[in-house]
Amino acid sequence: MLVLKFGGTSVGSPEAFAHAADAVIGAREQDRQVVVVTSAMSGVTDALIASAEAAEAGDLTSYQRSQSELLDRHREVAEVLVSDESERATLVQWFQDRLDELGRLCQSIAVLGELTPRGRDVVSGLGERMSAPLLASVLRDRGVEARAVEATHLIVTDDRFGEAAPIMDATCKKARSALLPVLERGAVPVVTGFIGATERGIPTTLGRGGSDYSASILGACLGAEEVQIWTDVNGVMTANPKTVPEARTLPRLSYTEAAEMAYFGAKVLHPKTLLPAVEKRIPIRVLNTFNPDGPSTLITGEENSYGTVKAITSIENLSIVNVEGRGMMGVPGIAARTFGTVAREGVSVLMISQASSEQSICFVIPQKDSQRVVKSLEEEMTRELARRQIDRIYSIDDIVILAVVGAGMRGTPGIAARLFGAMGSNNLNVIAIAQGSSEANISLVVARDDAEESIRQIHQAFELDKVG
Ligand code: ADP
Ligand code: ASP
Ligand code: MG
View (cartoon, rainbow, N blue to C red):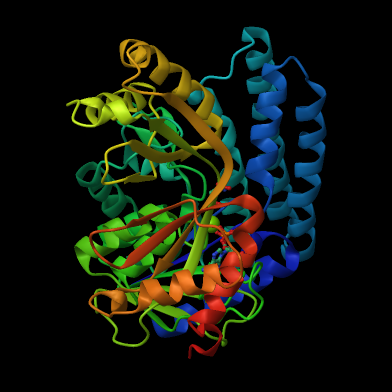
């Protein structure tokens, strides 16, 4: 059995839908049983969320505009690729109904003046609920017996709206009983990515970009031979090809390396995608919908010996918070209270670095949270600030974490020298450094203005343009 997931650009236009359908037909020639997972058409989730946020602010024109734009985009695909008239009419009515639902939701949001995480999940999942039936119709038009399935009936999650986690036992039970009969009949289920529902049936989402995760959850439940992530670039590359045009496809990666890359910003994979796959040892392949015979990446449990540094990734829109003071030395519990305060604010820390002199603690968090965190640290440390044990607490905004990833770095001397050599000789300033204990990654903090140049210089210093 194969699970094929199509991302937003892979279902972004009539041409893209046609390519995606070709990929499904190709996969069916390899394996009789194929499960499809699809994202919303590109840009749709953003438009839905923007409509809901505008409604919260009292602006109802935004959703009305979205309703007509989204109807046009989906209808266009149906007009080009679904030849049966009554099938097309049913589809268009379905889109209309979902967009009416958007209207009702936005009106309620406007009345309440509040967009709750729960409401946001209902709105943001509407895109997948339109694209999945559309892709199923396109497949049927090409002679494939396909059936759209809403993942709210398959993926059972907790109620952390916006970032829900699957409850695997319950999910696998539902997914197997709903999908296996369809597969045994020789039909192709086309499942909505990104969404799930709580045990009580309340809709949730798995987090932005979460359709990759949906695919690996279902792949693990069904014991798939392979989960294929079909996207708009040639697999997982040595760097984001939009920043580094010379980036090359990484033919193979280990689960650990792919997870480090995803966690540190390689958007091509949602960071949680690897979790279900690792447990069941299911290979993940990343391929280009628009270049199906081109290079691709195979991710497995095997460690690969090629290359020391394999890739460089980045996360943007971050701040570094510093808690500084000579008097901190030897005062027990400051670090614990610092991170306790951050945790109470519900903010997750991406990276920590402490100078061994104990004169400062610094850590990286999302920029949107930085002012709030600094303020609540000042409150927590009022006494230490008054006694001058802590001199100041402040944040630097507009920073970027760069991560250099590769399992072969472990035990290889000279990597750090080459890395900092590349930075130093090009006058690129490193604000902080951390190395994961897995040694499969070294991360650097740099200013936003230095980020792109740093990525290009590091890419060049490790000759990543020669990979493959
Ligand atoms: P999809 O809609 O198919 O899920 P995404 O936009 O989520 O696609 O992810 C694909 C994008 O990830 C690419 O277009 C590319 O710009 C970006 N990307 C960032 N880092 C990498 C990398 N190391 N390798 C490949 N793509 C990357
Ligand atoms: N459509 C969702 C998003 O834009 C999920 C996904 O594309 O994976 O976040
Ligand atoms: Mg994605």
